[in-house]
Length: 446
Image 1 (tube, one colour):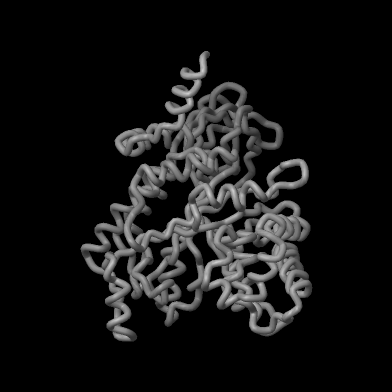
Image 2 (cartoon, rainbow, N blue to C red):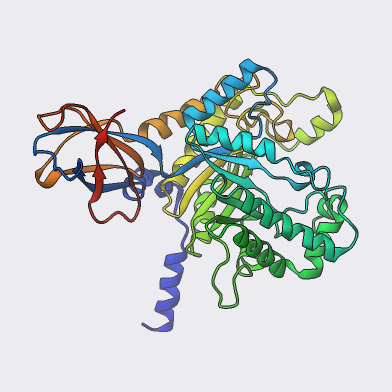
């Protein structure tokens, strides 16, 4: 190939995908990337079930992580509101972000709020919800008790990262390690967090994020570590991600975290896809870690209205805004669920009650009733994108052939067929890499 041909070929590969294709081909991509054909090989204590036996296959969990922060768990204003929050959360989502903001988490030195975290983590475990801690390091506010000595501040920061990741190993195994490092030196950071900001400035972004990730890995070698940022351009890539490697150039991170707060309006489809493609080139999974669409007023004069109204300003959810929010949510989630590099989407906040910035950003209203966006996600997460219960027939050698969405399943004998005097059941998972038959040993249902 000559030079001109190479240039044209590169330009073709880099050409943005038009919106019509991004949306029009989404269902086909979902079918390709989010489902799998598998063969189950069933046994019961070494016995093979006879051909013709019927079994029922039921999905119990998505492999894809559909989540939200769960900051309002038990803090929605009343027992009834708390119960509604929990019910709606568990019905829709399988992933939760737990708060670890240092200045709030450890208001007094040596007294971190581990007990509150355990309550949240225990609730998640009881409801089959995977957990993530957020964040281990962020220079948004200094804990008031931090000393002035930069060396001691760095020691305390790294000690804190290692301690949290070690203490909650097995309960919280996914971490946003460093948050928003690209613009660590913006004015609010320098004003509110001068001590933590100084250690990053003195070390440099690269050395700081490397030290932070190494501390998190030391605390829990099996943890999934995320570098998280609201910057979604080349600066995040060059300033942070490219620097977050060991001496041999191997990534110290496991996942690239992308914030996507859209208070001012929805991203175009082309931008959503471009962001995915830009960071997918690193060959690591992508998590959309903080996603917001509001169901109220939008516009450039909104800040002016808030300033004029002061404490009387109410950023309210409206019927028109809720309709728009639902449409934007469906579009955004469909595109991300169809992209093979994306493995998680986290909503921010789950309810309007005391939401960040006072925004009507929840999937639930302040009274904990679901908005249309919640209902539309339910139709997809537990409907269109969920494998309906299936009755399959056992073939020779106890094999059952099946296609379904990636995730966890239970298989149960639908009839006994003389094989057993009691119903039998077993669990299995469908993953991206399943190639060989999945061995499932059926056991009696208690």
